[in-house]
Length: 384
Image 1 (cartoon, one colour):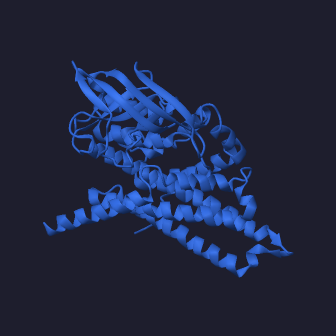
Image 2 (cartoon, one colour):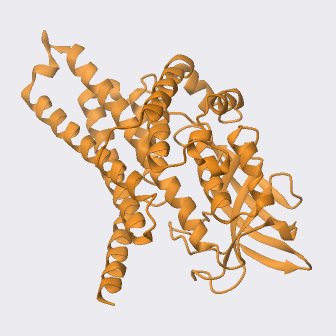
Image 3 (cartoon, rainbow, N blue to C red):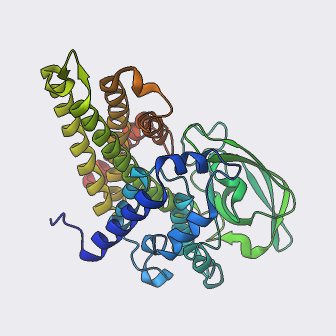
């Protein structure tokens, strides 16, 4: 397999990395992340103009990429810059629209790609525990339309979103795979309450409450009660994006740590000359390369037609990223010493982001269990 990116992807990566280094320095990022909105609409629009959002979508959807490696290239660069703009929501909601949307619903993709519409993925609930099939929010038929009741938790950049993709149960028990439906809910819909708060690692998140939210028939995305497959595809794209983002953050933390070891002196000697620190740094470099291999494997598998191959690769990558991300965070800070814990330095913000990525869309333990379960499922198919 050829692991070299195409010329187009290399050009995209170079342009995006240059833009982030020039326009998104740490001080600027810190101000944006702590701002009232939690991200910069101007920067988000500039990402759209650079073609960054378009790279996340196929030509059929109005973009010019859409492959697993396109997503990986974009989000690795975003991870290096600790970017808080809502591109994760764009890729997840966009994938759902592409997979299950009607022609009229797919028209919304153009505004997402152009940065006009901020889309947010609203699936997690307070007691979900990462289980994709656990959906308590309910949608009931009302004439030709629907009425939603329930709540969604920790929706990234939900306060500023224009459009939500919401999962709701239309039949079955709370943990059933069947009976999950997906709905497109405009942010200004009557009965929808959005309550925001700062996120631990920068930006903002929101809690959504649906109190008798009335939707038209055209709000239903895909077939009633059969939203799980679309949900899985959207989450899969999100998992790949987060893994690539974490890889970019690891690379930034590694570079900062290497620079510190090469310049910090103790008792008149560069601490990078200490054999114990050299061994720890060498181990860390190997772990980061393992993380890169996991991301490459997931990016290659996400475009395959085989569901089990795709999902196992994604869960394997998310497990690896969770374990290695925590290790990179810990080791980088420890090798910096006390200064590694000061908020004025970018490093602890990278460390915090790495830890929090582990908790998005399923943590290390969840994906290890899922990987094992998918392996048993694969074994049954082979036996059959």
